[in-house]
Image (cartoon, rainbow over all chains, first blue to last red; front, side, top):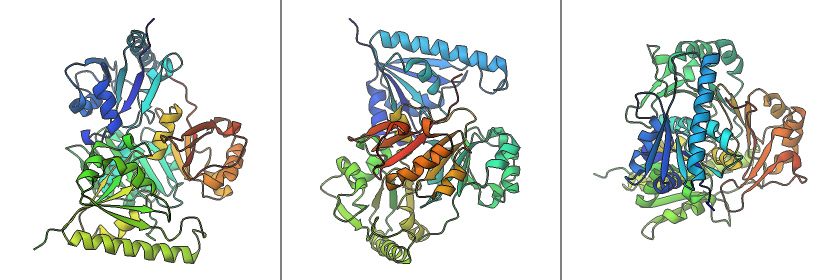
Length: 243
Length: 243
């Protein structure tokens, strides 16, 4: 009889390796197999963050995305390729778990907040022991690094993906006391227009690579260019005054 | 000449002491003074979480809230008492910083997400060096512990305080793919009615003391009673299916 291994979805936090939790560091150190997603030709952001906690005794398992931004995320080709990719990754993970070995699958930020971990989780959680280890989300690190209290007292917060079309962004903005816009990247011009229409541009702050060595924080209204990396977040903190 | 100390706002995470970040653990261990807020007669939730990382060599500084739930948060008496309380706390912290000593001020979850740290921050950040150390928010730990992927792809998330009145809750619900309701406690009956009206009760999950030893996770529709602790969160995860 073989004991089944456990799949750990491990949140590695926003970028600074020291912003990983004590638990995540332990799980990564102890797992016989450490798995991660990465785009073709890159180290993998989660793998880079976790590097300091890995040992030579561990097996590394890399899953290379078939696409990242090469084709539209709404195309059938993209969806089919990604679905097949996650099926294959889940099958590979399942074989290791059946072999009685634990796997730590690394995830940027938190596994259940816009994370790729959800796709293997969907495929494996009914059949294998799965544990999710929380991580500091990128937005949390961004507002802390920017030095802006985000929500107070009775405030409402809305989190929007910058991938929404302009009308959808406009419809959502201004409904909350505070707003976070994730996945900014090439959507910055559209996001800027939507914030301007909602009268929120003056309060908006752009954070690129929050908590990482190349971090940049700038009031969005003062930024002259429309370039922004994928790891950018726009914050509109609460206006509420102190008590 | 004296070098001024730094005020660290240290997020200690959702409750499990192992869910503190490596950086927070280091800052707490190294700070000559560790400060925290607590209600009268209690150890203090943040202090309890950080306990494992404190040493005998450190000075502890406790700030006891004048009120927690004894009088209405909207009353003038409450506001005046709290404002005076935070003024006094800030003055105490400032004296330590002027003395050249660093202070780690402990905060449940993350300091800038509905945290009391914002009030000393408002009073001190312009005059003293302040650094905010991110923490895992309670909501993050709750959705991970409940095993529910919260947001995927293009999803929008709304975070609402349960303290909102029923009409305001109803107006906000259903605008996003996923919703978190914080500060549930005695507001549970109202929250339940609002979720029911929005057609979301079947998807709602109540998490009490997420990541703590007495954690309880239950579909809200199956809970027969209307009691819930202050450390409860209601989650309405996305309905989006896997890719």
